[in-house]
Length: 120
Image (cartoon, rainbow, N blue to C red; front, side, top):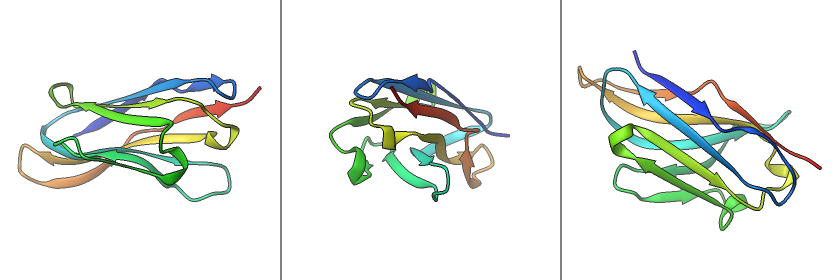
């Protein structure tokens, strides 16, 4: 059983920063990729940023230059540093990981979500 546990959400003023973390645990052989998605009220879930085990990244256009994704492969952890936050960044942020387990099965896993609210 694989679990993703997120932390770091909260309330921040426009222009502020937050750092999200997500750690995967369980019967894990490898994880590729790891990423963050978000879902605002009334909108579809969208990709925010994704990173491969080799460090290749891609970002949504709306967050380029403001958000940075990174990962610690040894800790099975992915981070999302969010700077210059805007009210439109308000959403529930979900961690996502493509996991190969000890039996060599691949599956897509999601965290429970963490709320990020940008408001003055």
